[in-house]
Length: 296
Image (cartoon, rainbow, N blue to C red; front, side, top):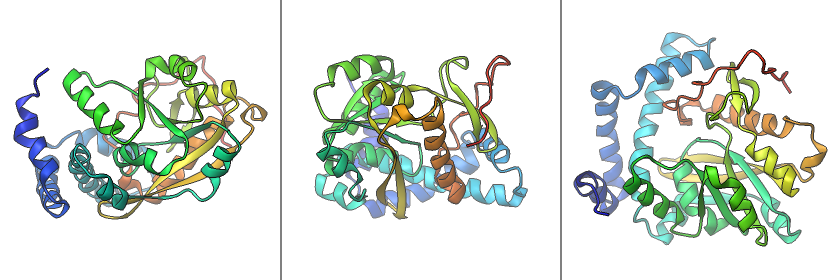
């Protein structure tokens, strides 16, 4: 399969530029995307206004501008991941997981890691196996363009991450059952079916959360950990963890989902510019027959 011209004209040259140059490009890209193309501006402003009803228009506008600057950094940084060296990657993402992951590894416990599209998840995807003792697995939604889907999968898998289409989750757990694994779940993905998810309040809105992370934690008696990506400075990130539970079957239905999602919410409220506001997170509405969970 031949690469599309866009790759050679725009993406490939970026992979060869030094980081100083790609951030100059990101600054220019910000003006193009925000002012000229106006990429998903209606979606971003609507999401922000609904999530922070207490904020003024000026405050919303300030967050939106900061988000688009960060978003443009994400674009060029993601392209750099296609060709980044291991040495450079280790500089760009450090691990501050304490003893949590190593202790669970020593206890031979599998882990369900919940997180979100916050800060640079692409850097984490590419680098995670360099700093995590478990075999790292990730479920993902394939990109419609098969060539770019293959490129993205290859990029994320370069240093050991095992990628599985989300529809093959059951097959993944069955095939990997003999390995000590850490399985990554995004808590902020919009569920495919509004009738088959857990409904709760997230960022002041009724939000459906997919059952996957809790379901597989209980089925496999896996420890549950929240993963946080912190931005230290431009182009440099740190991965941190919080242990949620070592005994998932002791938790009531929905509680693990709510704790993980609320952890993400706290991070977003703290620095909202670093979440993916272009995502249509609330495109599904709660059916009348579905109960809204009380706040934890």
